[in-house]
Image (tube, rainbow, N blue to C red; front, side, top):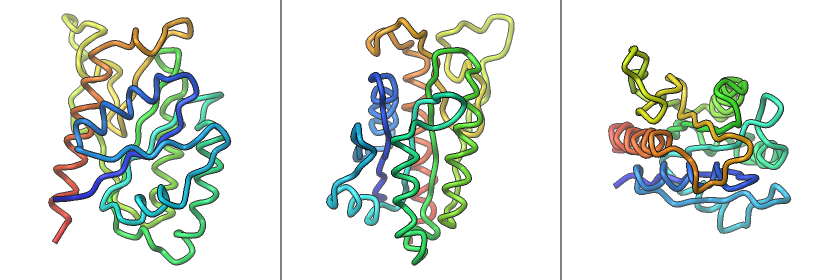
Length: 184
């Protein structure tokens, strides 16, 4: 069975809920970046042992949080030795607005994965874009690059839409399935 790790930073709890949904779908281990942007040695070991790394960050000011960026910069140690080469990677994000420049965050995560010589997995989901589509439908935000969610700035994590969380769960399942195809 493939080992999947979900490494993420969550500022207010919304990205944590997404991470939990991705992990549930993938049967993955959660690796939370702390409020200072750090991981423990054990968490770094989890990433090292993983066959797939799913990265998540809220979208702040059109990109990842500074805590996630600190983690990304610290990942230069495995980058230097290409320790994560050929791992499967994927990413997800949440922001307060429908657009919120979430795609910039996903592009950042994709670029980080490519720096590590990884293999990127997108959502594999068609968007809910017909006239009958409802905001709580699967992949309503229409992302192919990675999972996206939208949480109003005054909404608690408990108020996240089930459609966005189900999208994250299905995305995690897809990452696990694709990873299994690469595992010898």
